[in-house]
Structure formats: structure tokens, C-alpha cells
Length: 415
Ligand SMILES: *Cc1c(COP(=O)(O)O)cnc(C)c1O
Image (cartoon, rainbow, N blue to C red; front, side):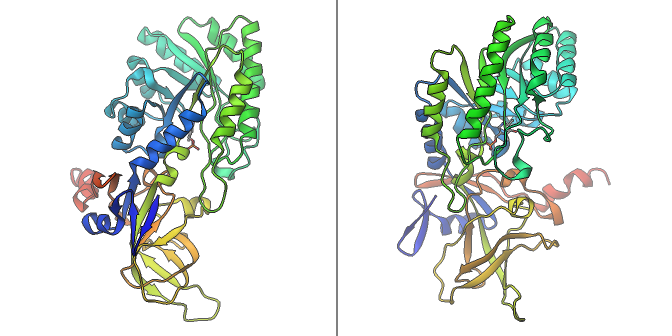
């Protein structure tokens, strides 16, 4: 996402240092060209496959980012009423929305039913019963898919693996046919598809195709029982390169899908998040203090103005993010732990990075476009950072920095 021109680093045609100067640090910066090109790469890999893309809102839910994907033709995969509200605010029509998640509340189901969203991805027998009951009370019919858990190892981090039998997500594929029969017989439910999402940051095509094969087999079984299935939702999970991993091979994925779906009269849905936005975002931060090691074998710390409150992935998943020094510096390169001001030893962004740093050096923590800002918090009463979208040679703030007023308002009104 960053390109070096002389002594300066650019995002598209905007100098990163200028963004930091104008909006301050910490700040998130995104490249609209990167987002669009990822979307187009996925669409062209799926040429010839009857498909719909539902961007997974939770990966990066900024309204301007949602609008960008909306304009490219995406629908949205949501997991809460809040995300539904965001999708609508970004211009989505209810027919372009699918609703995932294990714990949909009654009010969330009612909201989505009244709007008439495209599909509920149902994750349990209890939820199926609740959906039917709410549809009955509201005089609606709910289009639904059952999220099946195929017990396939996506070979990713345990916290983001979701398709194994020990995970809380979906229903075991062995139990699906009976639930589909129940749904098919229910006058308030319309069986629309079969859904699956086996994990995130998946590097290989194979586990996703194994999940597809499981869904195709289930579809055959359902068709034989007189239950038509219109779409297969393959979920998201396509991985990106954070360090030196290979990028997920969408071309191979598209080829495998074309091969498997030849002669099948079924549409494919997809819910990518990270793949579209992960490498198109970075967190800009400045060095506040340097604390070179005073004792042997102790790390040297660069304390920066961003923290786990802005980007929790290193603390939560031991995730590795590349760190780039964006300004030339006459210091000797040395090994630094890049840490924030929050009162937790888990508050680090990167460890043992060889960088030339001084007080005030501007850094970019890369690959932070997905699960970055959306997982930010106000811990330590830190206002959330702004988000900036670069478009060619211009940039604009797409979420302003929170103020101390913003922080206190919900409590001040209760004093
Ligand atoms: C999180 C999630 C996604 C998106 O996952 P990525 O790994 O970001 O592509 C898609 N579908 C469901 C149901 C999810 O929970």
C-alpha cells in the first residue's frame, strides 16, 4: 500500500507524512484504490461462476468504506443490528443483506424481518424456532440458510477457526437435513440456501473446497427430499499476506469453483472481509519516547502514541504486523519493541524490529485495514483515532478523531 518516492512514502499519490501532519497521530489510513482492486480481482477470478459478494461488514465497517463496496456492486454480510444500520446508512437495500451470527436477539431479528433482508444465516435449532415465531408474529416469511459446521480444519489461528466441531458456530452437517425438513414444512420460513464459514485468514484453497463439497452433497440430499436450495454461501476467510505468507490464490479458488459447479444450477454467495481491506489500511503512529535497554538481554522499547486500544491484533492473536519508518532518520538501526502507552504488558504492536528511530519518527503499522479500527476501544479513556481515505491525489477524513467530550458524554448526562 505504501510506495517510496525519494525520501518520502506515498499512499496512492498522497504523501503519508502530510496526512499525519494534517490529522495528527495515531490515525488509520486506507487506500481506496487498493480496496477497489482487491474487489475487482475477486470478481474477475469468479468470472463464469454465478455469484454474489456480500462484504463482511465487521472487517471494516466505516460508512465510507461500505459505500465504496456498495458502489462496486457488493451486498453486505452483517452480524448485528448495528451493522445493519451501517449497511443501510451506506445505501444498501435490504435485499442485498445477509445476517450471520450465533446470537441474534429478538429485536435484531424483528428489525431485519421488517426490512425484508435477503437471508438469515441460522446457526442453531433454537434460532430457527425463534426466527419462525418472530416471522409468524410479524406476518412475514423469513428467507433462511442453515450455517453448517462441516468439521473441517481451516488450519488457521484457533481463535479464528470456526468450522470444527468444538467451535460454537453452525450446526453439525449430520443434523442439517432434519432441520431443513423442519424449515421446509414451516409456512413462515423459506429455505434459500446452505451457509458455511470455516474460519478466517485461510491460506489454502483446499479446506474451502472441502466445505463446498460438503454443501453440494447436502444440497443433493435436500433436493432428493424435495427441498430446493438456491444458493451456497461459502463464507469469507480468504487470507492475506501479513509477513511473507503467499496471498490467497483467488484464481485457483475461482478455477476450483468453476470446476465443481459445472452443470449445477445453484448460485454461490461469498462473505469476504479481510481479503478486501486487510492490506489496504495502515495505522500511523509517532514515537513518543525511546527506552533503550539498560540491562543485558532486556528489550529496547519504542513507546509510540498508538496502542492495543487502536490495534489489538498483536495482543489478542499474537498477530504479526510489519512496521515501516516513514521518515528518514540519522540514527543507527537497532532492534525495538514497538509498544503503546496503555497499562498492560500485552500492549505491544510489534517486537524486535530493526528500525532507525528517533523521538517523533513517524511509523506505519501495515496490514491494519481489517479488524483494526473496528476492534478499537476507549480503554485508558483514550479517544478513538480518525480514519482517513486516500483517493488518488486527495484524502479525506471519513471518521473524525473522538474528543474528550465524546468520551464523557454518555456518563455526564447521568451525573
Ligand atoms: C468474520 C466473518 C466473515 C469474514 O471473514 P474474513 O476472514 O474477514 O473474510 C464472513 N462470514 C462470517 C459469518 C463471519 O463471521
